[in-house]
Image (cartoon, rainbow, N blue to C red; front, side, top):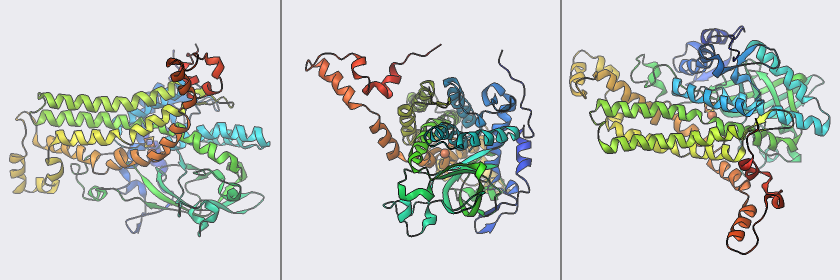
Length: 512
Ligand code: SF4
Ligand code: FE
């Protein structure tokens, strides 16, 4: 019998979590004004609701969204778990798809999860190389996070300035987060991270380097955990398409009545990280490995978008029915195409997890080739799904009058009359479905469904580079030479080196 005892931590439900965010005194700017209390801000609140759903899902379905912590023996969110089997990786993906279905947006909790999963093996390898004690520090940090059942965010993407120059050659060193001074107790960092998912909604964040670094970039090879309330941090909220609709007070024009994503710029001005929370300091050779392992986890985490795709497919089917067009053959075919595209993403992501393998640290990591293929699909297929959904929605998705017009005593009557679809469907419900399609394909959650799909976890070219690195052409050329009679068929053992990567995992049979 699976152990499904409930989470027994101070933060258990979504409401507990939301209460924990109040009164923290963060310096948050939005629209040219400082925000008093993010929890009560109408533009920010939907993103908090989305993250709160990760807590509520763990209460409703502990087997899916929680796990017994190997550090504390207590049940905690699955978002805090270091994967110790391929099954753990697979369950992350199932949880992500479900949360995508329930929120229709980015629920913001996977970056931190993927960051400390990557760090778990990287700190282990660094300690083995150089006799440091980063791995023990990380385990102690994770134990604290598990005790509180906290939200841990991840901060990787630097502002980058002139992309043609490495960090140490930038005219302004703050364009990459870096160490400004060191004391016996720790380090101080300055700089900024761009488009940080869920940063204001987290309790802690893990700051990491975002790219390969050279010997001259030692001060930029810094990784550590900071509370989001740390002195010296300023958050500037990212503008989203149609976000001001949340200020209008209604529930129709926002499209998604409760949920939204969150990205902000995080500026660090001499922020202190004590030694016990530093997990890398100057080990430039390991920075690229950390980025590579993080993106391997995170690129297959993008199966989250198949949950949004499920909701969008449902909206497209629903509006076709409300329009009286659902029996048309081409409509059915477009819904089949949407489903085919969506499951193509899921298939590669879940396969990456099933092909997971153990690192020396004992943590499992998913397959890098399939993770990159998954994310590369995500940079394209949601755009086609969005196009097909707008096709099925009709032009009203872009021209429909506002909720304020609907509520007007004179104009509203006209809208209820003329926006009618099939007699047996309510006009306002039809408007709500159209607004949801707008929300996901060009409104607020198009940020999450489309642009984040393009650039999150690395822009498309980053995946093509990784796919190119792992495609093992030498092995494939030998297959072709054998089939065409140029040389004898090769036994896999003769090409052991070439088989050591993706191909080796393709043929590895699951162990019981
Ligand atoms: Fe998680 Fe997806 Fe949001 Fe990334 S984009 S944090 S994978 S929900
Ligand atoms: Fe993301």
